[in-house]
Image (cartoon, rainbow, N blue to C red; front, side, top):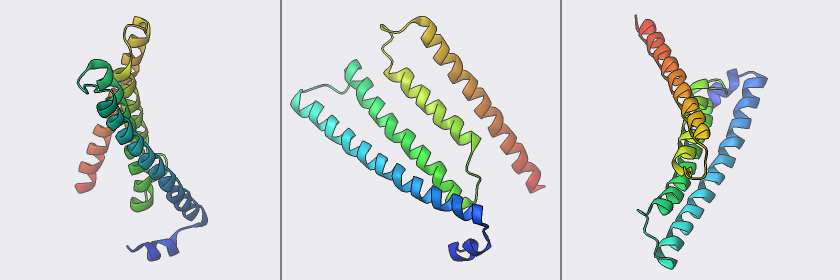
Length: 151
């Protein structure tokens, strides 16, 4: 169905959601472009000015942390665009879980294990495992729902 045809059948609130999602999508795209620019500038500056080896542990954590921010932003934008294009509801729990998993994974990657208590590392790991289990369970449910629909 074309956008103009779809727009005609939408109610006031659905139109409002789509407009808000379009605006949010634009803002997130701006954040992604800025983060990508900063990443490129910072990476270029690190390598050229300081001669930093990207494979050095501290540099790798900094670079990978910045890359993860861009990836998390892209996933967030993808979830907003999904609302606009596929008529999904605004809150997609699986997407929120995936973004949370990515954010905690980023935190674990850039974490300075010498300056953080073992309890903090255990807590983050436990949350990550719990989120992974919930995500897997929701994915399994979606697979079962799709197989029932095909019958």
